[in-house]
Length: 88
Image (cartoon, rainbow, N blue to C red; front, side):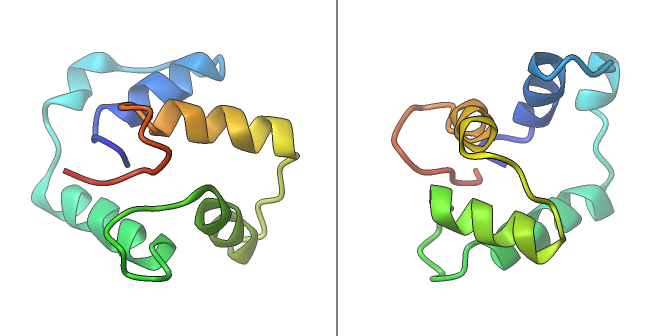
């Protein structure tokens, strides 16, 4: 989200193994999938995802995380620290 490279940063910050070389080789279908997921999470069609939209979206996939972890995840995705996550 935020930027496609954020997924690697977020995974790394959460202690998951990442593969940076794969970062530059996104297939068109993968980029389309990220864009589709973004559209699903952007419930008000504002072009950005709020913290509450992220929470609601995760919960719709039965992913429940506590407020501190949600805030940390959102902070990682909000790369420009604007208070919202957009895709560019």
